[in-house]
Amino acid sequence: MKLKLSPSILTADFRCLGDQVRDAAQAGCDWMHLDVMDGNFVPNTSFGPLVCNAVARSISLPCEAHLMVTNADQYIGDYRDAGMRRIIVHVEACPHLFRTLQRIRDLGLQPGVALNPLTPLTVLDDVLPLVDLVLLMSVEPGFGGQKFIPGSLARISRVRAMMMEIGSHAELEVDGGVNTETIASVARAGASIVVVGSAVFNEKKSIAASVDGLRGAQSPTPDQGA
Ligand code: DX5
Ligand code: ZN
Image (cartoon, rainbow, N blue to C red):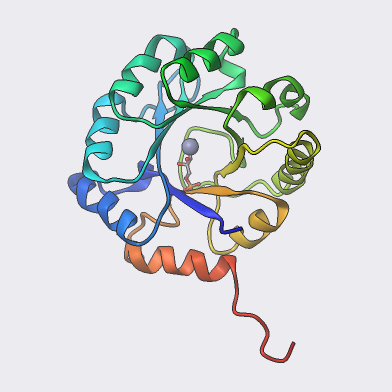
């Protein structure tokens, strides 16, 4: 199964955001990941529906909003209007998660649920049947360019096993510190889609070269001698 790439624009050059997301789409990425931060649930602020809408109108790829906010319910309609295809909310931030996920689905969007690095996976026993995507954070949310937390690999495998057990077709997304060093093990552990921020939008390489590098690192050339 081909691992999907969902670039996060958090480290993109916002002076030319339209060009940046078009380059990522052109390079063969599958989704666009929009990290919304409120300075309350996470210690950082980013952008809101206005920027999300500008991105959605610049590309034909589907967009997902990752809401790192305390009052997601209040804004779901705004992100639907901004052109998002999927809305991902944090289990730690939504006291009435059933209603929140239902509202996202009722608006015709895909509901996703995100878990912080140490949130117990048992919550998924009840949540998994209600979502189209589970996002496992492999860094503490709030900033791009952080180091992948190694214990995340075991969590990915456990969620993959839970999904297989109930026959879930939900996507399993991993977010934080995914780069050419970590992408292969994340894929092997069972992720179906990865968020890639600084590994795609950086000053070292072009977006196309960065995406090619990730694809190559994910599926290294088979050993000729084998
Ligand atoms: C962190 C965000 C991530 C992050 C990914 O709060 O949810 O999407 O920007 O960035 P990298 O890939 O640089 O870790
Ligand atoms: Zn994210």
